[in-house]
Amino acid sequence: MNKDDDSSEYVVARWPRLVRSVVLLGRTHAEAEDLVQTALERCLVKWRKVQQADDRDAYVHRVLINTFTSSRRRHWTGEHPTPVLPDHSSGPNQTAGVDDADAVLRALDQLTSDQRTAVVLRYYAQLSEHQMAAVLGVAVGTVKSRLSRALKNLAEDPHLADLRGTR
Amino acid sequence: MTDPNLTELLERAGERTPVWPPPIQHIVAGARRTRRRRALMLTAATAAAIVATVGGTIVLSAFDSSSPDHPAPAASSLSHEPGTPTPPVTSTSTDLEGTWTVRALVGANGQSVLPDSARGKLQLSFANGKMTGTMGCNEVFGT
Image 1 (tube, each protein chain N blue to C red):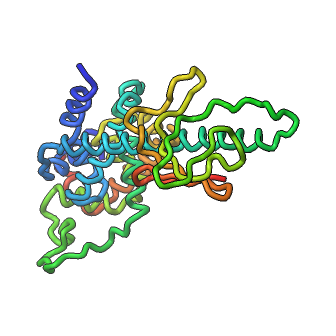
Image 2: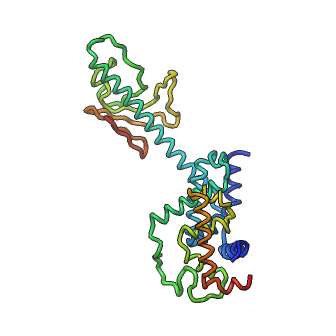
């Protein structure tokens, strides 16, 4: 299998999950696709390094998180110019608490960025705590404390109150 | 809240986002573009470093009055552009003055270290003890 085939297969297999991870980190769908495309381009530039990495997924997630952090540092993302004023905000609906997904996104919005990243990497990307420590460049203990605080906040979150009792 | 519970909630929230097939062609093309740009910059920097070293050696040898028969060092293969002053064959303090097109760079084993793709693309100008060069969108300079 040559390099291009290998990298293309990897991109096809991981693309949906990576895009959805960035959406759960708080970006719009379009922004998430742009970010993942940028991150995967960076990985493909040094694909041999990705292949030789002990944990390929951890390496790619590290590039993705670095790209995500850089873009957040570079751009103000609080406002989005639009030619037509929408009837409602493009983000999660703040008033209708009927949709589970909206409730989850609103609950994630209440976390700090570090806690939110930890939750998404652990419970959506399914990385282990050791992988997360490598991805985030912090100690395993820091990962555990971030997850612990995040879970505590989510357990007390009113947006998830209805969902907690039914699961 | 339990771990499986949170995973299930995140899965459902993620599933709500429709995802289309990845733009593989764009991703691969973007990666190739970046690789090419980095290779060109590396080549230009290498060429500039070698030319600066060779130029410095020539200048120093010109001031070395104690050994007038000192042989000229192995230099890069440069072609001079028409219309500009033709440098003398022997080394003097001014024999690099003018604009040059780099055809090859002699490495330690006597072979050119300049990639074929960069041959003839790098232009170097020497004037008043300063060196400037261009290679596509990249520029190099030195003294």
